[in-house]
Image (cartoon, rainbow, N blue to C red; front, top):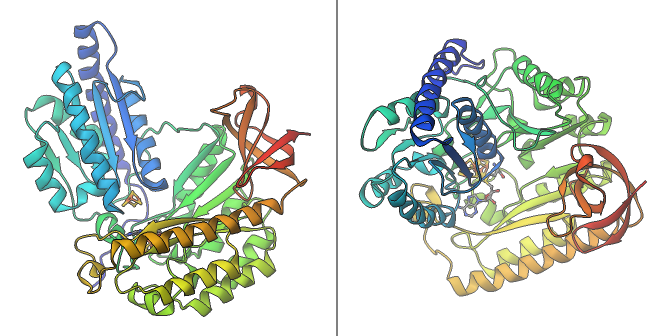
Length: 474
Ligand code: SAH
Ligand code: SF4
Ligand code: F3S
């Protein structure tokens, strides 16, 4: 039997954690008084938008418990919100933990916590216990909402406190949040993934697919808009299977249409759709919408039907091409970006040629290219014919160079266009410029100052610089 999941947030659990936040605040205040300064906390985020959103929750809780937030990891409390999608993400965390240990030796107050996808792997927990005993707290992806409670336990106990769950049926979304950007926000519409692509660890570390009630999503976005948010990104591992476990079934396009109605909201993005679930209603919905951004991130992974099958991706090369070319026809101003994996077990040069063929035919506006990373516990990890590193390197470079040429070609087509740009920040290299994103996600830099951050302004695209533009505000 399928497990029954909650689709609404649990108010009792929210109240319980709010009480722990109050208790945590008292503990922090005592430490502040003893030290004669405010305790500082730092949250470091690895991985995807979901983790970024989770980190905003952690930051909101820490700030409410009286911490001063800093980006400096030499702080009194450091949380690593980890990702395990590829091995290099794990390795990075181990490397950084070593550095934290040197800080901790100098600061008697320092506490270190690990959470996020890595902590859902048993082998990681073993390794931390054996080799990084100075870590104080470990919790997983399913129980992040219990962080206030864990903080209080951690401060009362000595030694490492670990609580990682295999799954949860609960949704707890109403705890304090501090957004990285005041003007844009991620919004979880669903959790987990049921697709089980054979290379991917996400279904194991994020659990089964569960959707939130549309009313709860809409009301969260309404609150965000009141708080100054202009752009939301609806988050899920395959957003177009949204709504399947809801009592009153709602499809993703139906949800999008509800979100579109929210007054004051200006832009809607979503991440990530799954190619074979991207149906005609989705296309119609994007066509009709004034708010949905002109960008679809549509992960291809491989252009070879043979490899796609081994990956358990539920489409063929031809089906992907048909969809992508239909999108190009029906939504000509929409940028299509993708993810590609090079070096999946058993992959040959012929398979890579198929991938190159798809890239050429679709001419993606941008693509992330990843070297296949073996994830223990996934079916692909025990497949024969793991590909030799030398081959992967050559193929990767070939894919990357074609992807970059396509991206440049597509970007160049925008020359002289007049576009609305949401200003995100002052340019990090030249402070006389600000940086923003067009609806299709292309970056534009143009003269302006800090006062424009969070504003949507009209910009003429004057000079193409490869993947981005220099522009002028009109
Ligand atoms: N749910 C999204 C992607 C989640 S992970 C989707 O279906 O597309 C983000 C990207 O990481 C994937 O699209 C894939 O290209 C890459 N990825 C996942 N597992 C990987 C692995 N084991 N090795 C290399 N890349 C991987
Ligand atoms: Fe991983 Fe596939 Fe799920 Fe994406 S759809 S998260 S690649 S299993
Ligand atoms: Fe990484 Fe977890 Fe996201 S594995 S990509 S942080 S869901």
